[in-house]
Length: 217
Image (tube, rainbow, N blue to C red; front, side, top):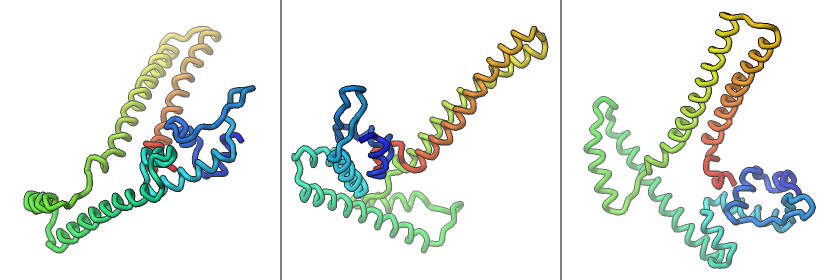
């Protein structure tokens, strides 16, 4: 079975199928004639299991332990349920704190952040946990990094285009060299278009949470 067929059968992307192979969760055979992956029915069923467990937010390492038999499914689910219950409590604390601030009726310009932070720290000392700001900000940082890299590449290409166009305008040359120069202009334009398209796709991936491919079943 080809990877396109597996993609349709399981409902996950080729990117993530390859990711799970890289992580050692899937081991398809290779066609001896052409070296391509040859997925069997067992691989499809294994991918469905991985998809199910990932939809339950079970970490890759836990899935790896389940596959190897180092961890029984019942024990793994029980342990994961404890983690989910802890996260549920943390969300409940955050929700209640937001309600508490809302009822106080303060405004942004008069917000006494120190008092609230002090109250929050006391709650954390009692075992409560609030949102991890660093995790929340990761998507923004990843998008900014991609934008900076893509922007630098586009600026360089635009600079090259401007120089070549200026040269053609200031010092006209023969038909042959002119065609060559136009071709050299088209190449950077193609790079700029490709970078813009890549940035759009990258933004979609980050927004959908596919930055860490494992998170996309």
